Length: 117
Ligand SMILES: [Zn+2]
Image 1 (cartoon, rainbow, N blue to C red):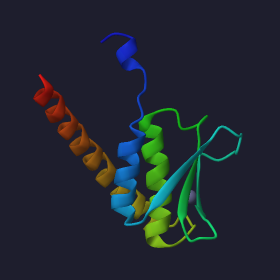
Image 2 (spheres, rainbow, N blue to C red):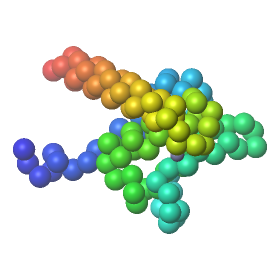
Image 3 (tube, protein in one colour):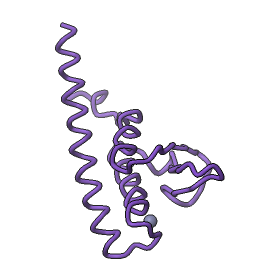
């Protein structure tokens, strides 16, 4: 595999779709290059919208982003900011579901590409 193919590609649109599906909420991603000291954070704004903040400097690959989003979505689903056993179990479940959904998205994309030939 050439060096170019090894460059990380982050499928932001797909990740956002999957995040909305798994959480059952209309979530927005805010990406920041400001040095925040955290990789991700969950914020509820004044209008009740759920926002996941992500630090561009520490979320370098798609794997990093999925890890961060799964972490925050697990907090949403168990309704706690603690890193409890319950949260930990939920995090694993969400991450697994995320990987499966991302794979399905990939399969659909491949089919679309085949259709163009
Ligand atoms: Zn946390």
